[in-house]
Length: 288
Image (cartoon, rainbow, N blue to C red; front, side, top):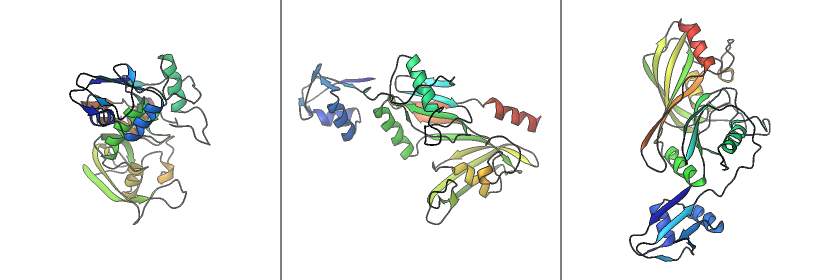
């Protein structure tokens, strides 16, 4: 990916890079080290003074993937030069860990990028639990990752999930509380010294023992939706960590939609991920 622009007046090169492209000082240092910043096709120091009409070019694709590519079919719902968006399958870990060193979404993306003639370090703008399916966004370079991360820090993206839960829910409800965890425990709990969290819920369908709800998390805490619903005695089907004791195979939670601003154009982008077959079948069995 290449950024191009022309200077309109005299200005320091580093200031231009920060003001016009929104590059961070840290990224500029890395780009300079990799010799990726040009003025009129020539390398220049960051204290160089631009003149009106000077053409500035920045090459951003200098980080490459270091993980093993593994062939796996991916459900790509959006892609351009800046990012790729996947409708993640359930039972798929996002990033390699000590316990899951391979067979992850990252490994599959490394293979996919290769098939497209690309090679970039894979950076996830958001994460989903292993069992959770749906929208997950991948930045193709550090600049895009920074732009997307800033949106998530500022809580500007709108996120919508679907969850099948125990019990009959109200038409509309919400949950707010401080979340955290004790020590290295994986499970999250409500605690006074925790971080603020807030989720809005809308019931889409309900019967005596099971409801389908749309969840809109305003904050982005780990396990937020799962803990909030469990705390309301509406545990997500399949979520054994938060109290489910039935026979549903996986946590029935799906990120169905995310609305963000494109990191380059700034235009609003609506990313929609159709339900996966197992959750669709589970719903059909319940509401047939």
